[in-house]
Amino acid sequence: MNIDLSGKTALVTGSTQGIGYAIAEGLAASGARVAVNGRSADRVDAAVADLRKTGADVVGVAVDVSTADGVDQLLRELPAVDVLVNNLGIFGAVPAREITDEQWRYYFDVNVLAAVRLIRTYLPGMVERGWGRAIQIASDSAVVIPEEMIHYGVSKTALLAVSRGFAKDAAGTGVTVNSVIAGPTHTAGVEDFVYELVDKDLSWDDAQREFVRKHRPQSLLQRLIEPNEIANMVTYLASPLSSATTGGALRVDGGYVDSILP
Ligand SMILES: NC(=O)c1ccc[n+]([C@@H]2O[C@H](COP(=O)([O-])OP(=O)(O)OC[C@H]3O[C@@H](n4cnc5c(N)ncnc54)[C@H](OP(=O)(O)O)[C@@H]3O)[C@@H](O)[C@H]2O)c1
Image (cartoon, rainbow, N blue to C red):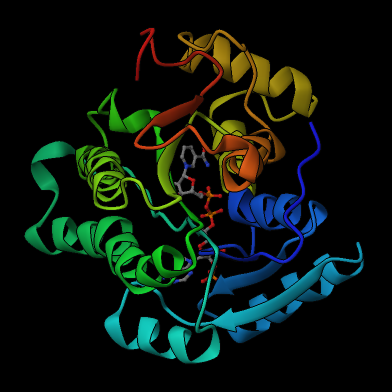
């Protein structure tokens, strides 16, 4: 398969690090012009500079996409997008009965409403041009609700519904809308978390296997997922090759969710 995204403009929200950065890198390596996003101009500039070293065609947009003002500013800087990747997502453990109304609302604003607003913003242009991709990064937590972060799980379940609903809205237009269910992934934050739970003297390879064996035994992969493994699925979904896949939730979870269907 030859994945060619030349001539396409992609926006990846929350892409100064982690999975978003890997997605930006993957899309750019396939020829897309990629907009990198984060809240801080310094971190956006640093990510853009790193990606340009690989020859990538990237621009940076430092805005908080979880606010309506941020999206207005984004639209001024980036009026048209062919591939929208709603990667931004926050997570954190809070005991179920202690999650406050404010936390529930904040998770809804950042993990759900931001994606809805961006789809609403860019979908009409995609439909008008007869081609486009909207891809939401969900999580295994959307279907296996973690008791220590119900608010996160609920927000990701909602994101699956958002994707399915907008895929119906875009039916027959050449625009596809899908979500990707990412499983436990090796990002900087997760690496620190792993070393809090296993022997600090272990090599990374041994540490992650120990972590998965003890704390994520459902994983069939028996290691963490690398961000570029998520990016590979997103790059395929972003490409013309995925034209018959819409309204779906594609799993890159290492078999973590014990189910044949999402
Ligand atoms: N890591 C995992 O194991 C895992 C597993 C399943 C699913 N996921 C999902 O994958 C996605 C990425 O996760 P990750 O672990 O790679 O994230 P991460 O390392 O925490 O990175 C978050 C990114 O979002 C940016 N950001 C935060 N708030 C923002 C806002 N309001 N507006 C714009 N940018 C913002 C941050 O940049 P600034 O700080 O510069 O703003 C950063 O680039 C999330 O949706 C997450 O739920 C992750």
